[in-house]
Length: 155
Image 1 (tube, rainbow, N blue to C red):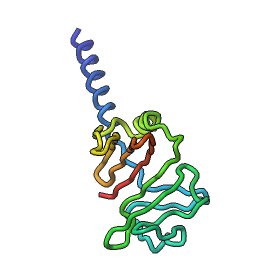
Image 2: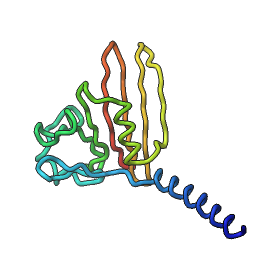
Image 3: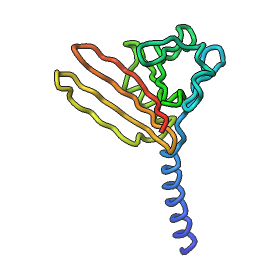
Image 4: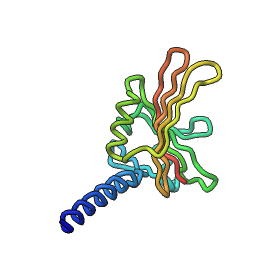
């Protein structure tokens, strides 16, 4: 009887630990491009500048280097290191399917929000984070248009 109770307790505690572990997976910080080159948060931009073109105060990855997004932009910090990576998707990207896929690979989100915009429209945001990185999936609905983007932030 005691052995059965101990075994049940061990199973329950182990299952809970597995769930906690699944929610604490590290967030990816590196993006592999079509030509096997990479870009990473915290990386010196000068080492990768040949892959980008200036776009306002950001830098946009040159076309044809990545197939998973319509456009990738990076934002640099004061030390000219890659601080944020934006993935802008075409109209076919589904927010809920993407959320489901990221939850499967990253665990449960650390935060979710939905809010109405002042001029009409709505924004949904889901985020995952660890000690070094925050990853957000965002859907904006304005004037009948839906856009989905994701952003990696270096903490």
